[in-house]
Amino acid sequence: MKIRIINYKAGNAPSVLHAINHLGVDAAFAHNSQDLQDATHIILPGVGSAGATMDSLREMGIIETLETTVLHKKVLFLGICVGLQILFEHSEERNVDCLGWLKGKVIKFDSSKVRVPQMGWNKVKFRNGNQDYFYFVNSYYAKPDDKSDLWGIADYNGEFTAAVQKDNIYATQFHIEKSGAAGLVLLKEFLDL
Image (cartoon, rainbow, N blue to C red; front, side, top):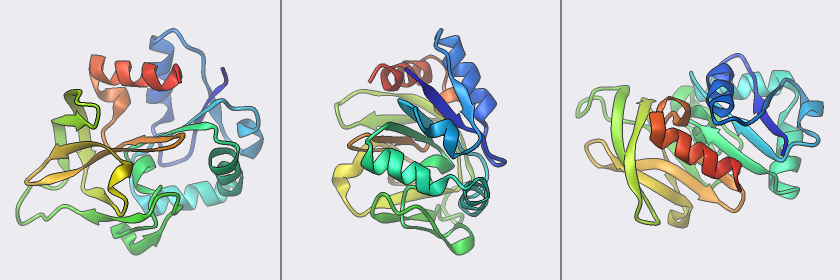
């Protein structure tokens, strides 16, 4: 098992590495395309904006390799927070085109109805019936075109996408690495795939 965490300017790769090490599993940072060549699991953590994340990935020259590895070689992929949002076609945040691996767009919470960003614990209901509380920090959320891509939903003045899954691609809007025991269980389940 070769777990690679993409380490870019806007990410929080050290926190994710710490969580994986806490599970007794080895992982390493990926700084370039070569680091992804033999990966069995790729994790893209996120903090900050979709635009900054896309800019960082472009600067690293890693997008093409990511697409080949994840979409064609079907290597397991986990996106976290902004790492979920950039999987979609477009984000309202800075009006940026994203990876487009999943059909849909990312929109902002209505700040006239809720506090933005959402910060804190919220209950996620998964499509298998499981539910637990996870830690969120987000102003934006994804609206998948294909409802079968929804893996988990939460409620913040209405239901929103808390997690997505399609084939070998998994992603959580919440910070799996900051979500205590529930986050570690989910992280371990991904690493065990």
